[in-house]
Image (cartoon, rainbow, N blue to C red):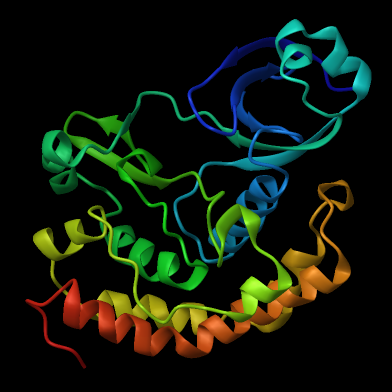
Length: 260
């Protein structure tokens, strides 16, 4: 059975906590019955699975089932009224630094995976991520002057984010998302070729893979079969309109670049 060695709270509207389980690693855990609801866990899980299939830089993650007695035994978890069952866990990145544009632009020059800046842009357009803020990218120090980019916090993806419904999934904006972190790519590289390259990678992702990922959402996160089918259809439809979205992104957010 899973046991907990230590728990400490983190800042965040979902009340995430750093949990040290009975293994050496520490995990950032988002719990059932957090203030923003179980859809946050659903979104984190689906997006993490998609990111892993596409070989994007995302921390290790897993789903951990915590029985009621384990939560009751811990004063911090009990005080927050978290529910027992499956929880979404993402590995804590040590020596990470949040990307603050005006302070850490120099880190971009030392990125060992700089192409992932471009891939991040395309991925965010596909999943409808309107929350790629400076806090939702981590630079992990690899060595002196060398950093690795990681993507985190995907609880607010898809139409209506953590409040998505079957009806909201049918209504998708075709306007590109262009946050300040996306514009880093324009500032430092301004090369649309990598955007188109990764766009084709997403389009080529088999629909069966998307279906398998969505179907594996834990049952106690309360997503109905109809809702799962609606989410699969949304992601497939989104692949079809991705070329026009990327083209628009290049023409607007990356005005310095020429389109194909």
